[in-house]
Length: 85
Image (cartoon, rainbow, N blue to C red; front, side, top):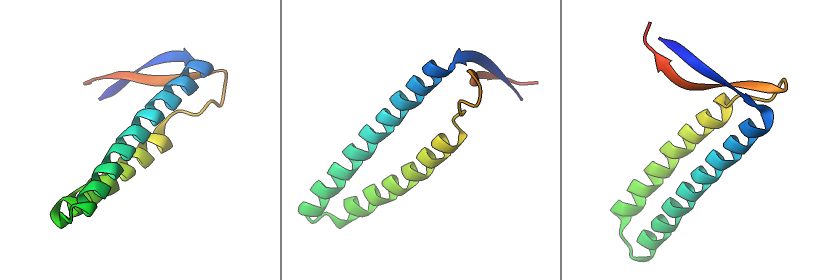
């Protein structure tokens, strides 16, 4: 499989990273709020499910943050789609 890249400006890359990170933060906040609500209602099955979801999403977020291109030069390569080859 071949990854096709767009070359984008460093400033845009950092803006995209911040935007995507903010989306992740919103997801974490919603899940954490739902978990606290379930805890208040004493619904242990839901609390456990949400805790598991949070743990899985945290793992995915760490991969996202680790694999996002760093601005080592004035331009970055960002994968836009893949082509099978």
